[in-house]
Length: 135
Image (cartoon, rainbow, N blue to C red; front, side, top):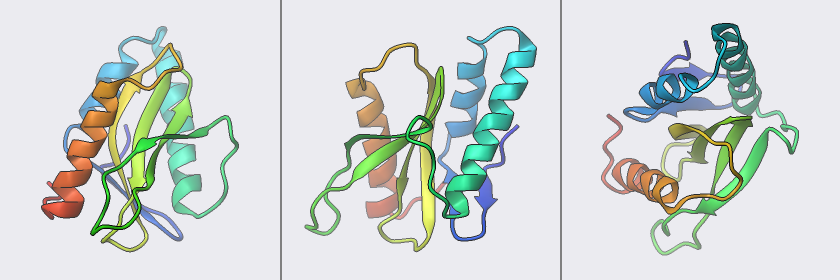
């Protein structure tokens, strides 16, 4: 499976509480089990690429919704790592230098961003960036 914390050449990636569980749940919608394993390998490779500071292909990373404003600065976007049909929503931390946080993963067989996913990312962002709770 995927580690809670991954340290790459340039960045560290931290999975929020419940993120790995959401990946496990999302993978249950994919069959056969062999395809689940290849999906995990692909996601790990994308995480390695992201944390190494290398650019990703447009098809594997997508700009998604807006995060809340941090200390009255203009709001930034959160992003999604894509390995169809799985997406992992993440942001670059405002207060922890060179760190990404993955909020959660979803099985997604549609293109539109749901409000519930934006709310989940923003709740995790607020807990980590504003309330300083990284659990």
